[in-house]
Image 1 (cartoon, one colour):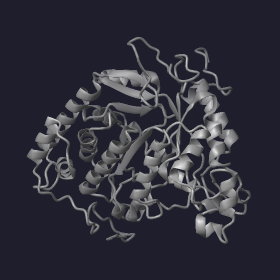
Image 2 (cartoon, one colour):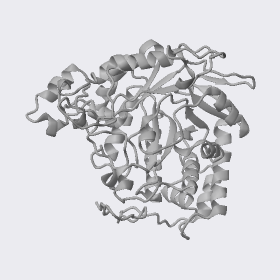
Image 3 (cartoon, helix red, strand yellow):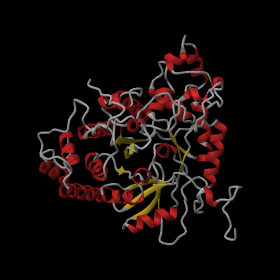
Image 4 (cartoon, one colour):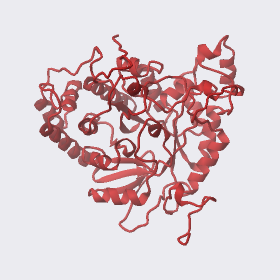
Length: 468
C-alpha cells in the first residue's frame, strides 16, 4: 500500500499522495445526476462524479453544484419533511490522555504527562467516575436527555477488574498492550464499566464507546466486540457513536492515524454493537489528505453496513478542523475542506445513503451561518445543545460550546423550517411552538425550563434572578 509523509516544512495539496484510489470514473456527471434525481441507488462512480461536479474538468462547477444541492434538498423533503431536529445533550469526555498519535487530532495529551512523577505541565484532564456522575447529575437538572462521551485511550483504562488483571499479566504491558496500572497516574479514570454506570445515572441516555474505545476495552484479550459491547450495555450504555471512522479506506488511515484500528475492525465493531442491540450513528471526517474517491468509498461502506444492521440512526459529516493539528503544523496539509466541498459532502451523503434517514449538520464544525445553509443541502438534524465540547475547540475550532433552545427555535424558523426536540434515537419528538421561552421537555428531569449557559447561572448552580 502506498503511503506518504510530507516534509515538515512544505504544504502538500490534498489528493497528491500516490494513493491507489483516485477520483477517475467511466461515468458522467449528467448520468450520475439523473440517477440521483430518479432515486435509483447510486454507485461509487456516481458519488465521485457528484462530489467533484464532474471529473471531466478540474475544480467545482458552481452551476453543477447547485443541481446536486437541489436534488439532495428535494430528497430530504421527501424522506423527513420540514422538521429540523436537535437533542438536549451534554458532552462529558472522561480523559484527554492518549498515546494513539492521530495526526488530525489535538484533543489528546501524551499519557506519560499524567503520571505521578511527570514534571510536564499540560492542559489535559482525567475525570473520576464520581466526577462524571456529578457533571451528569447537574446537567440532568438542567433538562438534558443525552450524555455523549468520547475519550482518549488512557493506558490505565480497562473494561473491568478482570481486564486489569489480564493486561497486568503481560511481561511488558506498556509496550505490548498499552497498559499501565492506575496507581501510576495522578487521577484514576476507573474502569469503562464504572464510568458507564456513573454517566447512565437517573435515566440519562448514554451515547458512548466508539469502535476505537471498544477495541481499547478489549485489548490484550480474546474477548469479542460483541461481548465487550454487551458488558458495556449491562453497565448502562444505550447507543454507540460511530466516530473514529475518519475515512474508511486504509491507505488514508495509514497517513492520518496509523495507530488506530483499520477499516475492517471499525466495521466489525459497529456490526457487533448492532448485534448487541445498540443503536449507532456513523461519521466521516473529511477535508485533509483524502480525495473524492475515498469519500465515495467511505459512503459505500457505511451504506453496506446499514444494509446489514439497520442500526444507524444518523450520518454525521465532520469537516476537518485543521488549525492546531499535527497534520497542519507539520505541513502535511495547508487547510481543510472548502465551503463547496462541505456542501457537496452533505448533499451526496443524503443522495447516496438511501437507507439512513437522518443527515446531521454540525454547527460546531461549520458555524451557525454555514450550518444553517447545510439544512438546504440535504441535512435535517442540527446536533444538540453540547454543554461542553472539547475536541473541536482543542483543534482550533471557534464556533462555541453551547446552544439554547430559544436559539434553535429562532434560527430554524428563520430558514423556513420547523424546530423539533428529539431523543437520541429519534423516536421521541416535540415541536417547539412559536411562543417562547423554550426549554427541553424530553429529558428524564426536563420540565421546559430554558437551558442557561454556565455564565448565566449563579455559583450555586441556579439561574440568576432578573434583579442580579
